[in-house]
Image 1 (spheres, helix red, strand yellow):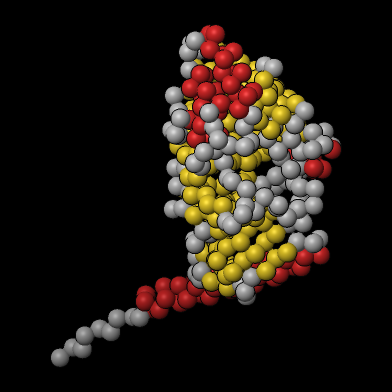
Image 2: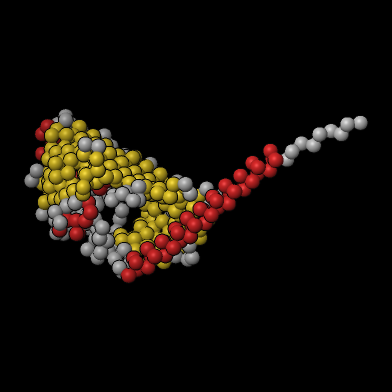
Length: 345
């Protein structure tokens, strides 16, 4: 009787050996990368502390093998010399192991924003995340997204302009000229969707207890000077160097009122408040201006807002071309001072 031929196991052993080799190489890469991340994090923390940053957290936890690098910082406190900072039960940064040039930072349990003298605001929501990519470029791409956030001042903190929103989005990326990145300019796009103002505040007044939405973009010139989070604030050195916002345009919706805004140049004064003027093409502006006049907020000049409402009423509720000026630390509509000018630092 002829014995059955024995099948070679080579066809099984070779693929397993190749898989084992690839797994060993990939694991070596992952452990080297995770070690580099941990080492550079520690070095960066030391450098920032030497520049008067307050950075605290319990020991960093690195995980994610085999396809991710995940760094968790429990009980994180990060405060710049300017006094601005964040406090979070946990901050988590993740990157794909095959693309460590793009990181996503999330606050899974919310965070507290410290506003340097104005007090703290607790921020919660369905998603709080920031992504950073192209880290080797002069200006990396930055994206901040808050999904259905809520804003709650803590203790005796100054009020926050809005209580909640459906979405807040901030995009920052290098400005392109002829397809090439400009030397010292970055583009900024900000979107606010369906925000509700705090009770008695100017946003609630302007929207008639409705919703506020904004979609604004522009270019920041002298962007390289936005690096100093010193005690004067992030915009102080930028302002002193002649930094400015250019090519600003966008759309606003406040309750029943709608507006399209444009401005060639905006800058900041030595007090950090915005300077320049904005052209506004408004539809049904009376509702927003009258709402400001009736606002209980101490930040709104009710006399000025009432005068502006009366002057605007001459054109009825038709579309109107308005000019808003930021000067002398105030926001002006014609001869009427409405409120303090927005403060950048």
